[in-house]
Image (tube, rainbow, N blue to C red; front, side, top):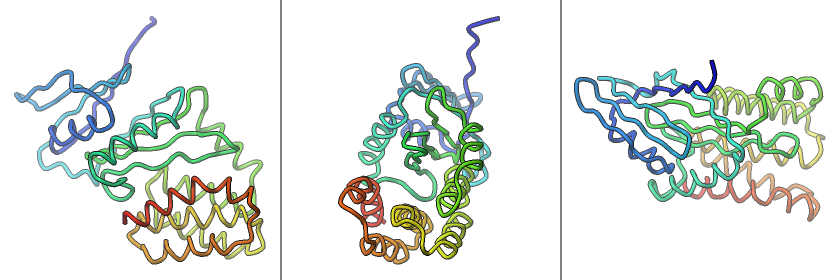
Length: 238
């Protein structure tokens, strides 16, 4: 057979809260049912999902997870960020809900994640890329401090374990104090981002200050400008 379609069904505690969250991401409600079981259908262009309510549901206990492949994850991320800022007044980067920025691997955007109000993970990847291929490439060709950064990203951005991820970065920074300044800067910036997610604002500020104090060339600072701005914004909104 061909042309099959699959629609994920995601749990939530409050259907209307979930619909409002997805509307901030640019989705539209196409169906709403109150009885006998509360549920709804949301759609954003060709992307459709079903939401269903569960009594006494705890989002922190959700195992819901959806993989979505799109042609341009970076453009989608920017659209999501604009919608979430408009709804919440700041970027929700910690707790539930939250959005995790794209992680760049070898100069290309590989994808990003969103955790919705039901604790469900939306894992957005670039069309044509595979997570398994990226993992194999990282493990076989990357070492030193960059390896620790990649492991930390997998722990925090894929598994949601920010505590273990930040400890991993700290181990890497301790093990490779003489790493290239760009490597150290990227590790510190991600360390600051994780610290914000863990409500450790002072630690985040200290990591950002260390980046400012690094001996980086003008071209290197230009390369890091967007990431530095992102971390500065997260800290200011924390």
